[in-house]
Image (cartoon, rainbow, N blue to C red; front, top):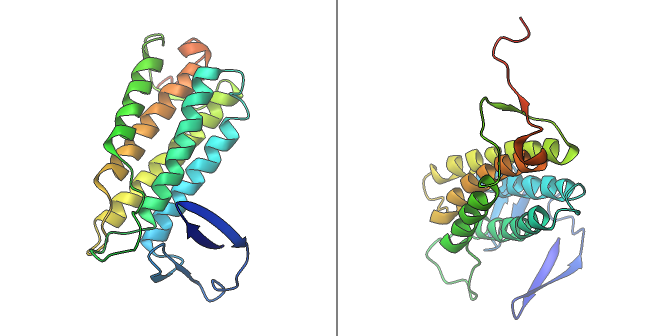
Length: 200
């Protein structure tokens, strides 16, 4: 997509540009990188996580608490994608880059505590499943964990900075999605529990 940043707004002028046909893309800094670059992989997997949450929300519209939490997380994930697409190379950009903040991580922690406080005690590991919402939340959780791993891989590379709150955000979000999956299973009463060796 080709866009122009105007006073903090993004305007999408054209959807296809053909500029990526050769296997490269541009970061928000204007830097050209291969499409299989670790940074592109990281923010692409964040985008996958966001798409999973969009599917989850087809099943949570009747739960204002959970749906509100997920709506905020979707917006945060766009912030995170913008953060990852704009590496801090120590050069002036001409605009203030969007960064994930500690306050967003702290909000997730409060939301985890809010949901977890109403759940039944957990007596075994939980299998992904139960209600459609819970199953979709567990899928989103596993994709979120993959996004976290991609960001850890990126951060370990030389000269590939990742904001300090970015990985923390994904770690907390995956925890939240686990708790939310239990919440969507009748606050834990409908959890599908793992029975070790139960199929032998």
